Image 1: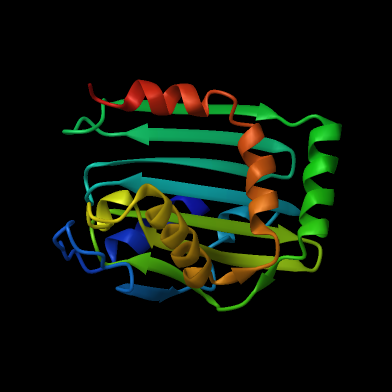
Image 2: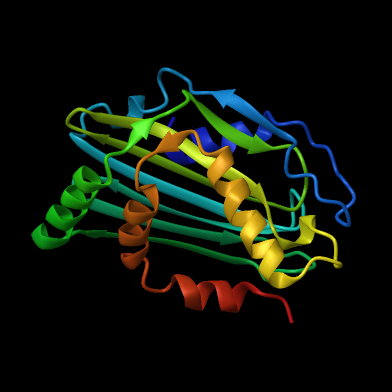
Length: 206
C-alpha cells in the first residue's frame, strides 16, 4: 500500500457526515491511527517524503494533489473530479531530482526539526474542509502526520475575511499531529510542482 492509497483509505473510513456550511464546525475532527505497514511498498527506499493536500466543499466536490519522493524519484499527482465546482483533470508526472534539489530538501528536513507529536492523522468529519498529510522517512526522522481544518465555507458570512483567515490558521495549527517547521518542508516540496497553480486554475468550473 503506497502512501497515496494509505491516505485515500483514511478518508474512506471517516464518518460521512454533512454539516450545514453556514455554521463553523471545525472542532469535529477524529484522529485515525497510523497503520504499521503503511510504507511496506517503499521498504527499500532510504529516503521518503510525501505531501498530500485536498480541499473542497464536500466529500465528492474537491480536488487533491500529492508530491512523493522516494530516494531521488519525484512523482506528482493531481486530481479533480467532474463536479459542480471542478472540471475533470488528472495528471501524473515523474522525474529524477537533481543532486542539488535532493540535497536541499534533505537539509531543509534537518533544519525543520520535525517530530511526531501524536501518532495519528487528523481527519475531518464535516464537509467543507482542507486536509494535509506529511510523511518523512530519513535517517532518524520518521513522521507520518497531518493537519485538518475547515475551509472558508465552514465559517458564517458574518465573519470578516481577516477573522476567517486568522481562525483557519489557528485551527490548522491546533489540529496538527506533527511539530517543527513542517511548513518549511512543504514549501520546498511544492516548488517541485511547477504546474500546480496552473492546474488549480484550470480545474475550477466557471
